[in-house]
Image (cartoon, rainbow, N blue to C red):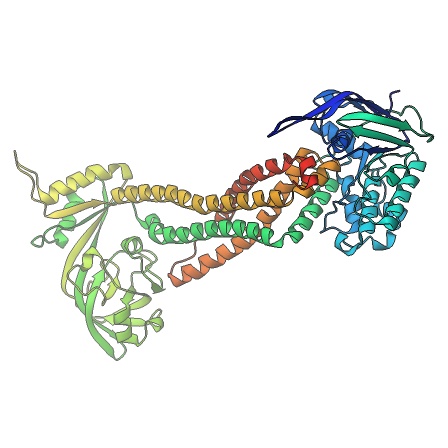
Amino acid sequence: MKPLIQLAGVTKKYKTRDGEVTALDGISLEIAQGEFVAITGPSGSGKSTLLNILGLLDQPDSGEYYCSGHKTSDMKDAGLSALRSRLIGFVFQNFHALPELTAEENVALPLAYSGVSGGRDPRECLAQVELAGRRNHRPGELSGGQQQRMAIARALVNNPRVILADEPTGNLDGLLRDEILLVFEKMHKKGITVILITHDPAVAARANRVIKIEGGRIAADSLGTAAASAAAEPLRLPRPVSYFSVRTFKRQALATLGCMRRNKLRSLLIFACFSIGIGAVTAVLGLTGSFRKKVFGRLDAIDPRVISVYPAAKTAGLSFGDAGRIAEKVPNVEAVGVSVASWGAVAAGDNKTAAPVYEISANRMRASYSGEVAGRLFAADEADRDAALLTYKTARELFGAEGSAPGRRLKIGGKEFTVTGVIEGVDLEETRGLNSSRGVVIQPGAGENCGLTDRTPRLFEVRIDREENVAAAAAELSKLLNGEAGPGLEAQKKFTVHQAKFFLDAMKRTNNFFKIFLLAVTAIPILLGGLAVVSTMLLSVGERRAEIGLRKALGARRRDIAAQFLMESFILYAAGGLAGAVAGVAAVYKLASLMKMEPAFTAGSVFYGFVLMGVSGLLFGFWPALKAAAVNPIESLRGN
């Protein structure tokens, strides 16, 4: 069996502005299980570099380091972290406790990275250093000596074989120094190897072996008489801790929540970034969906088989006879609807008025009218033969208020109708030249026997039997009404022949473009939110370098650090996303109400916002997470 610690020709060099500095120069050293070793030497002699290599925080440039039988030069980050977690307990001069955690939670930190279910109870370790009564206190509520004893308890929680202490009494007065050294002596008597760095000869004198370093070399090595075995059983590394275990997730989540409590402003900023991003996407999608429903929703009511015909010139006019000619001579015609504009006497009780009367189909009203409706539009051509729509002005003339008109009865030239709805006006091709803000709308043909004057057809709706026959029928219809052009001449266009299919196709193309444009617009708040998240998280990495270094010293792998930062992004993303989604939904309903639109809000828009912002947040969060994982623990623990 090999010694617990064995160094063979270890050299470490650093590059500075002034050139290359040799911190360790060919050091060979063996330390057996159970020794109490003090490493002394002047500043800059290489003591701290040696301690960092012994603690697996740094690797030598040349030479070999065997730690509990493991050749460290052959090990990667995960293996070194596992060995450091299970074999070594660190005690630092500046304590390096996390201020947002209690003493018990600080002592429990190494357990998150040990990869085993064993380890000691943190309360037992605190009791061993006489801090059982202070376990719920935070570091700021403890004295310097108590904080150092808490750090020792943290070093003991994983049952380490080695305690590495860097100037553990440097910030303590004489009485507290003796208390801490007494704790180390008790640990040594239990068989734990204690290695400490000190400038104090009195502290070194308490050790059984003193190694003096000068100029990166061992200048003196005095072996004491401690009962120590010459060799130690090689440490069997545990299986790496799973990221998906409940225990790991709970510890990571608690650590993340503690950091968030400690840095409330930063957490609030990241929360706001996610909330605004998802809220903006939800609101934009909801409002544009409402607008699209109002504008494009009428497309479903348009029959693509319908061809509309109306006069193109003032001198041209339609007649009821034209409808018969169209039905007879144009192939594949299923029906011809006639929209009529006329005048009539309209009465409701004792109230009477003369108003325009329009005979317009339910299909055309639903496809063309986009204003407000008190009540409803026509349901179907046959079902509402005695139904009537009033404009606001005419409803007030007959009933006093438009809201009371739906369901009431009126007469047009003695023929009774039921008011189904009140509309803002009738601004269609059929009403050209008339006062569109006044009038009554009834079904085509319902104006017969109503005593109407000047009952003139204004528009024909020609319905073809099948959609594929529409183009040919439109050509025949135009030829019938406008005539054929002679040689070298153009036909005189008296009537406009409009295919609903052309309009539908154009609107669908516009709708598709609108969707693409919408996706581009929603990417803007996502991008801005993501940039804000990455900026804030990068600042967080800088603020938490000491914490990151401490966690690495306690056994955290690079991926553990990255996972913690990503978890912080995820928690804030989930909380901020929920708040943003609620705010976005509320904004959609409020603004849609103000704009007199029906909210077209779907769960898909919230899901889209969540996914888009989540992917963006996690992608942007990867950079800070990787930057945090790459933090050098040596520099961060030194405070550089």
